[in-house]
Image 1: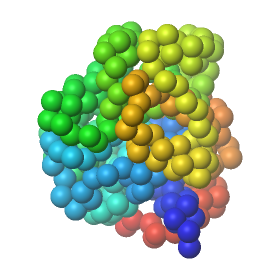
Image 2: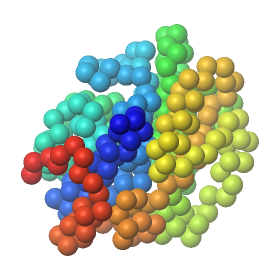
Image 3: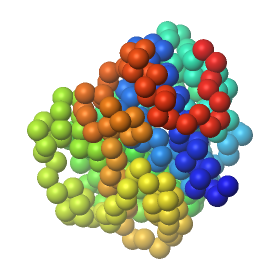
Image 4: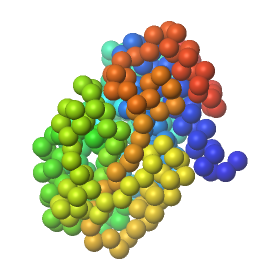
Length: 283
């Protein structure tokens, strides 16, 4: 089995985990989680350099990924568990009071893989800026990746961070926008049009690339090239085109599944479309 095919199988299991987790507590955000399953699988299971067996908060000589749109925690938790960061069966505790797998990732639970509480939108790029500057001070050549939702770009703090990073040529930061064009209240064009994101980031001093975030080959090739780039004079922003609800036909492309769990029948219909490749966790 090729590496790409193996990653696709992991992503399929991640999608099964997502719909089961959100259904189990009738709470959570399946749409964006399903859309980002391929990207997170590729990053944690292939692209990034980090010690999968020994998590530490400092991330010295390791790549870091900050998931600023923390409401897609079901995807993040599944990817971390399927990579051995914590037991897979712990996914059954998602969003249950006093467990480590809260609705938005948090650090006080000491969950391996989580370095910052996220989901209060707009903050992740600022945090990534700080981590990246720390790495430069420590002569650490690894990259800091920051995943953001496109609706999140309506937050002013994102643009303050983008302006600082671009004007100071902090070239070890890589921003990724989950460009599914949907948010909780509707399409981004209806709620608050984002305009020409390429032109905006370029005007702030960023180099902008695009990729299909639901094409595993494209994700791996694009992100690996970016990770291995050592001579860029600019930070890089990736417009990652995805489909909200990817993999489940009745969820795809609809903002309505941003934060609504499937009922029993919908769960069965979703699971019928998603291959079980690594075994479901025990409920």
